[in-house]
Amino acid sequence: MDTLQILEQLREEHRLCGKVTEFRVDEEKCLVAYKGPGYSADVFIDRGSGDYDISIVEHGIIGKWNDLHKGRDSGIPWSILIDISAIIMILSAVTGLAMLFFLKRKRRSGFITAAIGAIVFAAFYFFLVP
Image 1: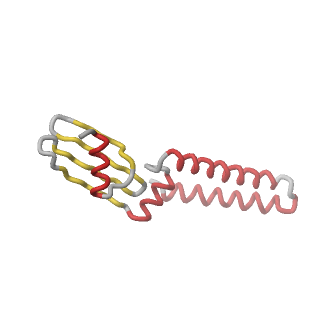
Image 2: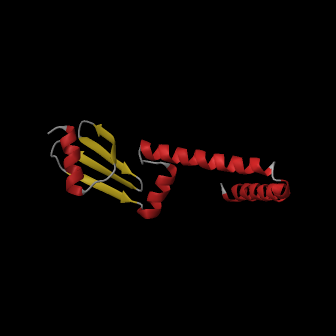
Image 3: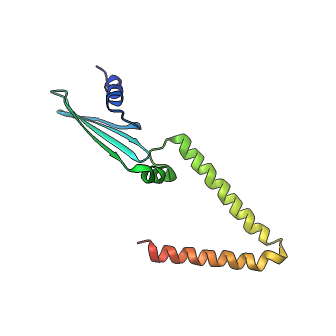
């Protein structure tokens, strides 16, 4: 049986999700690691007997959202989508600040609001991040 057949058979029999991120072979054992957002499964295969143990860890919906937010184990298309979204948000923020230079009635209150927001953010970072 070749490697791909083993991986797909394990995936079907045990409903393993994610993509294979590691396939390591040594003298006695094989390790196969499946990873996805909020999910990981490790399969340890005894090469002599063919017996295997599976360890599955699911972090729930919050863990999945966290991994999707960070782009961890979510694939290249998702990472590209995250980057495009970040660029759009940055452009929106920069154009909003640039507009304050041209709107005389909103300029003072806009800059005061931006300064307060920056100070609050800096305070949160300083006091809450170890």
